[in-house]
Image 1: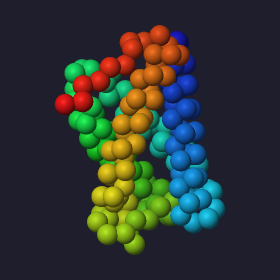
Image 2 (image 1 turned 60 degrees about the horizontal axis):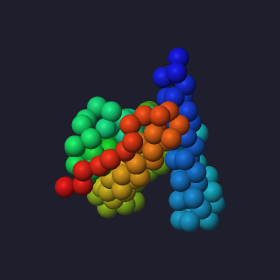
Image 3 (image 1 turned 180 degrees about the vertical axis):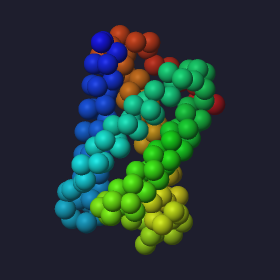
Length: 145
């Protein structure tokens, strides 16, 4: 039960944080703060998976490799969710077609995959410290090279 509560707390933190980031991104680029409710769930799931990378891989895994794994993971989930909510259900939550280097009918974009690399690094560190402070797990330590 303790494990379920821990993951639920991390799920809510990850989803809320990503939803806030989405709103701020739209505020800066479009002048209005908004996001779609599906972005809470996508952000939450990605935070759990990316934050848990060093639960599956050794702490000796170089940090840049963890970020790369995170970027590929988020891009894959973005493609899957995009195909469902944008193409299949027609909700038009996002569309990268107007950007260069967009693929799969505008569902993923190379520039955003690079952003996911950076955001993965933040997510990994935040998740590790939350696990340390809130759940008394191992103190984070990283190998950068």
